[in-house]
Image (cartoon, rainbow, N blue to C red; front, side):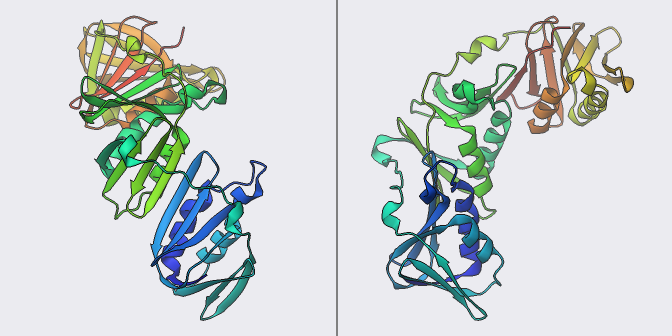
Length: 365
């Protein structure tokens, strides 16, 4: 193999793939990245058997060939090279990297030991094409509610599904729930995509990528980001019937400016660290105020009051971190907050965009 390529393109491709490569599985070859020529392109790829990242780079291919190289050393080395042309050549399973002022050799492994890269057949898959901004918003609004507990694997992903000709994303960790209505569709889908995969896709998006195509079959999902492909296994199993947790109405509700509400919640959270992050919301329809209070025995106590548009009075206790996370991903200048008593789920939505719902279970005070 011999190719000539720019440092910028190679460094970006290695940055993407090296995140996927891992040697912790007991298979050393998975700690390598694959270099393989493909006509007038260089394929740079890595897999950990759960996720595969494939990057295609335009290059001057002098001689076809392939090799696998330890991901960390080649990524770090290329990243620190000057922005100029690089010549890559393979001789006796060793990668020669040459620039005008550098000449290095890295020991590699024949690509015959490298796992076959997974593919999703477009004929057997459901396909969606989204604007990148819509994808980023939908994923960011839902992954915050996914579980990080590996013993509850079903809840460690985001549930992509259709209902009444609309595509929804949903996630829950048992304490909070996020649901996003993404778009109208004609297909039917039920798939749980690992949160780690979605995070990898977000990290791989460049500023010049405006659309993303998603292919989903019965066991895998592929994200096409122009010259980048990320393929992952789906999580096997049935997602909980989460919609039964979403209240149809609330006895107490209020609308408030998001920035002001976020500020008082963050202040209250400073005094809630000693009580598991618990804060109290007291909603008073008579004077149109919401009081946010918290107490920490070693720090002190705090109460903040803001004006709001209120229907019904009531109080509830909840985890301040969960509420701050929800407020951070809500669009629009105002938010709506509703609940029905101290033990019923709290519903947080954007004041003018009803396509996103966030549920937070209250604390038992």
